[in-house]
Length: 154
Image (tube, rainbow, N blue to C red; front, side):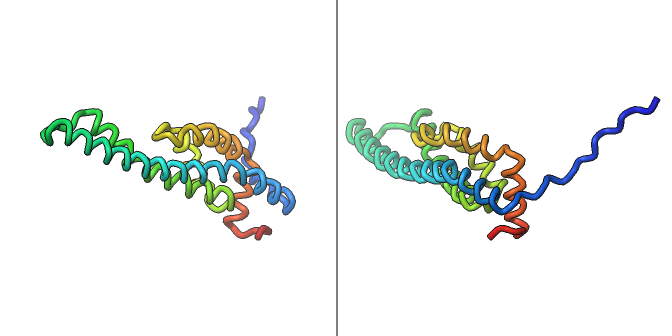
């Protein structure tokens, strides 16, 4: 009795011109949400730096200038400093997703958007889920591949 051989993987069918336009339109809103959420993260960074500066001045004047940093101060500082690279990657990933330019970066940015790094995560977490769902489609992956190869799409 002959055993059934495993199926031979086939190359995904090319996506036609109209489907590429449709996919690009579908990727626009989650990409815009990621880019906007990244921008919101940068604004939150600026506000938190301003707030941290004001709080340190209050701490220095009330403690007489001899206060020692605590674990919580270092934790807040680490989160504030992580917010800039997180925001930049999420914002860049959103822009690349809207333009269908880098599937890998769009996927990484959508995954990073799920991390609760700062207050912008209120926006980026649901948008990141939406972006991951959109990026998981085989048609979307093929559209990114075709666009990268310069095949039949401007």
